[in-house]
Image (cartoon, rainbow, N blue to C red; front, side, top):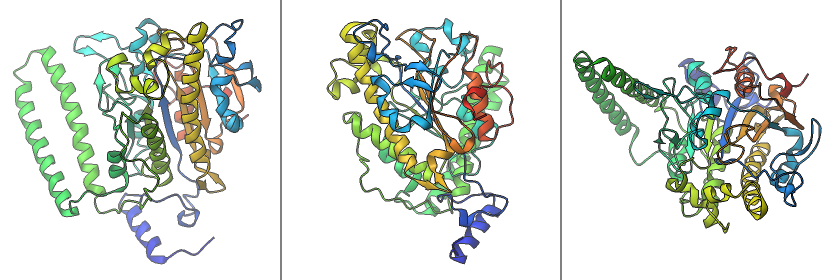
Length: 448
């Protein structure tokens, strides 16, 4: 074990004692006997509108997203070929879905990818539930040791609309958590201070807290004068305000903790929706850096929303030279040259995901890499454009968390996707035995 500078060790010990773990890469030399393991992380990456699924007897069958064969004896078709490099670190999953979501519209299912909720209409509007990342990060406080308990990213940004959200992350009341879609803002949030001094930032946070206090006081007074339906709506709103209040308090606690120093050279921080390749790959770089510096342990990234023509990211394929936009490609994915065109877009997205796996695998950690301590879930809530069954899914990474890869597993219709979520949350450290409509665990993805 290398001898490190005592001042660094003393500062880290002091920060730990105050309830804050400094955002540095995990280092064995700084880990005490009770904390000798690197952190465990979770990332989910989502794409809309399903995949190319031509019939097996079609001349375009090699563009079927799912592999040939099963178990350990499988072969990637063209859409997933880039994953060959990581064959022993990925598992392809077929046949899974959220049973409740079968009944809703295909374009409505993106909001449910990590929640498993039916999104039924209640008296106070559409009702979603907490997403897997937030359940682990907040409900079970697995995100409490880092500067950011979680990070929601997307190509569209913000929250979007009900059933067409621009985020995969939902709070414990089912409210969408706004996502970031500008690399420069994400980088600034993670690694860079604005021009304001620490004192100015602290003053700003104090003022924000005061405004929130006034808002809550006024709302309490108003609550007594409202009918029951309006009270429910106000309660839902106040829950969101309280969550903002918690974020403000958390930001104030971390003000005096230096952000990690990261070299921005090579990052296209000016990328936007007119330069989709730069945007996507820079976001993936930022995910890798956020994990490497232990700035957060829970990240979601929505490559595009289900909002059709209104989605900023819908035009990405067209900008990259594909014959149609993302929604247009999906509608021709079942047969003929449409299956090939969609398959090529599936291939492009797989290359993006493989890029992230490669970045994480090149970041040393303990006796392995950051990838070995990170569980990644990649996929869609559609098989074909409007079909909410047989989700195309890839589980990757997490070798040190007990996952067994190099498999193509096919499940029957009676196995809910939430069973996988139970296994994921347990491997991350949650003690919960259920999630959404789960009826057990998914031990098939674990080493025996």
